Length: 196
Image (cartoon, rainbow, N blue to C red; front, side, top):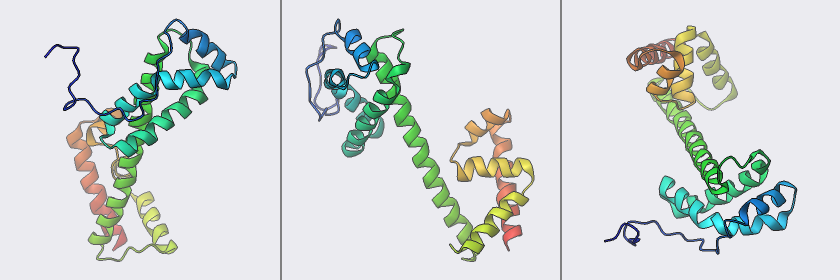
């Protein structure tokens, strides 16, 4: 199969299929018009790039509905930040970077949200159900986290609440991932002692 041939089995569907790509020569003029507030100039840019942005989002998240939502979010962000486009690269390259950054940002948010739910479930399980969702118990947990030694608190918050990996925390703090795991283990143990 030639390299340029597209395989329907391997390539993600590009559901939006909106459009005729703008002529590349017209693109800088369209961008300049959008930067000066011309909403009508945004539509040809959108139509010219929506299929590629959707395909990228779909490859990154694997779910068509989520990819459609992210595609719309990318173009909202593009509209909001098009003033920062300086033309040092092609508009499509800049838009691709906007899309990648937005998808990664959303994935980090989702991981953090999932991590908070998991931490809460783990703490409830470890405490025998003593942690409930009443305001007083939330304050107890927050007080317990504040009572941790600084390094243990930092690792616990970054990993269990914010969703960072051991490797990311190690890079942020200049420590080894194994050291981060040890700090996290100690932090969880101390939390359980404080809460019981």
